[in-house]
Image 1: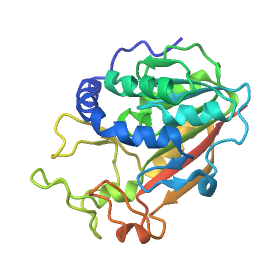
Image 2: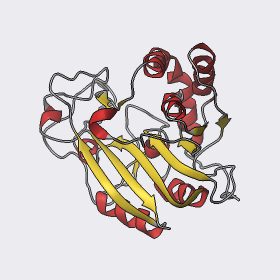
Image 3: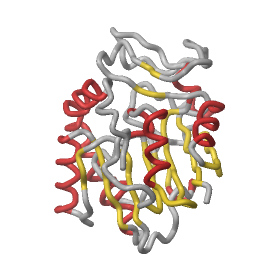
Amino acid sequence: MGNTSGIPEYLAGNRAAWQEAAAEYVAPAEQNWGGEPTWGIWGIPEQDLRLLPDDLTGQRCIELGCGTGYVSAWLARRGGEPVGIDPTPNQLTTARRMQHRIGPEYPLIEGFAECLPFPDDCFDFAISEYGAALWADPYRWIPEAARVLKPGAQLVFYTNASLVVLCTPDDPDDEERPTEDRLLRPYLGMHRTQWKDSPGQTEFHLPHGKWIELLRDNGFEVERLLELGAPPGATTRYPWADAQWAQSWPTEEAWVARLRA
């Protein structure tokens, strides 16, 4: 069964922050539940990235840090049998409301990706769009994902690009300062990121070499790494993300890995 080392010490701050922020994600949830799949802060269409299998019929899927649950809804519409897990009650409340209003319905569990309440080798596909990919320690959630996936199963996760983290200002008096065209913090040694304008919260980012090492150490082979900027004409509601900057450098990255058989 799962990791028994207890609740991570950083979870309380992250959960409290998302409890407060959940109201800001109700309107995006309605759009994402009712529309075609798009990814990340720029809304890149799924048809351009191909992160989801076309047919998930009969496949058990787990969304790690599901938030308002729209990714799991996309999986269900492709025939999958998803389960969403998230530590934030207010986000799950929105997800349940969307299930009743738009559908489809599937299990939603309050919990965290670092200690999954599932037996070994029970899922055919795992995914995280931000969620665990940003807010959970990869040295805890990647081993758990490997544990609950069946041999040969695929893991997809989508998060901030390492480079954008290095170039984003950290000003507690101006949290809307856009990304700059210079390095503001070290790349080597990246792991925990705690922003001055977001006290109590902890994000997690790794250099690419460390991501590859961690995935391989847990039995995964990397199939694809997509480094993603802003498509022409794209806009976003996130003030730190500069579309002009993102024409030259990646703001997001998507990893696709498969557990060795």
